[in-house]
Structures are given as C-alpha cells and as structure tokens.
Length: 338
Image (tube, rainbow, N blue to C red; front, side):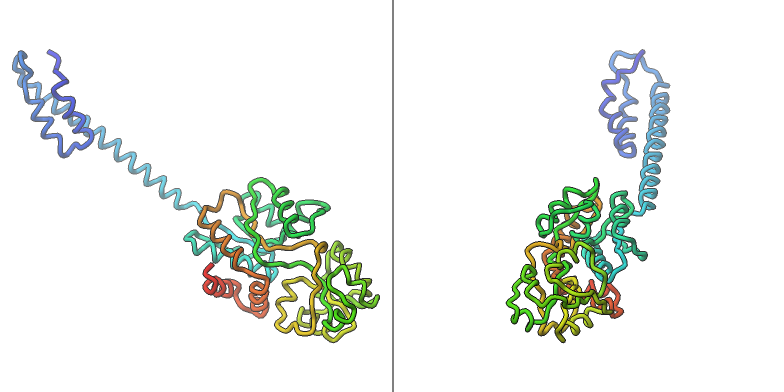
C-alpha cells in the first residue's frame, strides 16, 4: 500500500534544511501507521534506509559546493589586482606619480609604482590596453599626442579637446592647480623700463636679446615667443643658472612654470603672462576607465584641489637633490590631508 506522504512532507523538508536536528522527528513520524492500513514491520526500516541515502547525497553535494567555492576564492586571490602607477622618468613625473599613488593607497587599495619609465605616448597606450592603471600628464602635451595640430591653447579649451580625443577606456581626472606652461622670464627693471605687461608686449624689449633655456623648447613654443624678436638661443644647465643669468640683464629666459617655481630666489625677475600661446599645461591623472571606484576618484579630486605649482616645484627640487619621491610625496599628503 502506498505511503501517505502528506503526513511526512513538513518533516522531510526540515530534514533537508537541518538534518541533525530533524531526523529524530521524521523518524518518529515514519513509525506511525496511517489509519486503516495494515501493520507492516519493515516499513519504518525501509524508510529509515531511504532517508539515510538522501542525507548522504545532500552531505556530498554540500561538501562539493564548499570545496568549489574555496577553490574559486583561492584562484581569485592569486590574481594580481594592484593598481599600477607609471611615469616618464622625469623628476616632475616621478614626483606627481608618487603623489597620486600615495593618495590612492590611502583609500585602502593595493597600489604599485613602476620602476622603469616609459615615454608619454607609451604610457597612454598602456593605459588604453589595460596594462597600466594611471600616470600623470600635462594637458598640452597630451593634446599634442592625441591631435596632430591642436588649435586650443587656453586651459579650458585644451582640457575639453583632450577629453574629446582620448581613446576608449581612458579618462583624465580633475586638473590640479599645477601649470607647466612655457613662459618668458625677464628682468624686473627691463619690464618696467619698456612698459611690458604681457607676452603680447614682448616686442617692446630691444631686438636681438639672447634667449636662455635649459632644454630645447618645442617649435610651437618658439613660434609663440617670436613676438619678442629675440636673438640666438643659449642653453644653461639648471633653472637656477637661468634665473641668475636673466637677473644679470641683457637676456630673456624661456622656461616652464614648474622649473621657474623650483628656484627659491626669484627676486628682480618676472614671468610674462599670456592669454594665448604657448599651449596650457595643466597636471592631470590619466587612468583606465572603470578601474577606480568612488573613494579613489574622490582622493584624486582632493589632490587636484590642494596641489599647486609651488608645491610640486618644491617637491621636484627635493627629488632632483636625491630625495625619494615616495617620501617627499608622503610628507606632502600628510601635511595637506589629501
């Protein structure tokens, strides 16, 4: 005679959900004889055996599932999930990279800095391919890489064109208060004597003044300062030497804002502001889209709101003198709460 399952349904479900506590209850139920049915002494024994088989199968399935989950977790832990921060090898890039890496590490993620430098175009390609998480760049240089002949020169226009021209899966963060724009440096007396207020007035200086640099300027920069009617370009070793030479008079200097700001003593010299060219150069983090969560993006924004040209210039000077970029960046981060 078929067993009346209605008597046992609730207990059987309980056995599956919690076998140790419910087996006795179920077994007590299976010992009952449904009303009107003849006694069969072997029925409880057969049901007990059937139940034991169910329990064994459930136990085996649960054990397999747990082992599988542990295996997957172990495999996942073997995967390197660290965010890698790169740089181009220059003191400014190494220092900015250390600032960004330190700020991101403070959010609790694993951050690693690359030991070997790479050219800016290669860094951009590595971010686009997913091989690199982030690197620092200046917007003007970035736009020149992305656009053969960029027309934008102001900070806002350059940043907008950069955002429009970035490869897929690449983003830039908020620009810091750091400029590395090329600019003319002139003696204070010469500026006042010629009534020069900006780069547009540079032609008021005597024609043929030598132009002193520490590195070869891009052609577009030389075109932008051609209004000065300068003489031959002369190279000196350091920004300090450039400032000293300009202070002595009879020359003009052409340097970046970051290099000029790295010189402690800028008395008797002044840079010429420009509303146009040379192209703006704002510091931004270039990163792989989707690799950063909200806490990391907030950390980058805090750096953007705190880091100034003077701050980075001072850190760069320390790095050039032999300090570890990570130590210098860590001190700045602790001081500014970024």
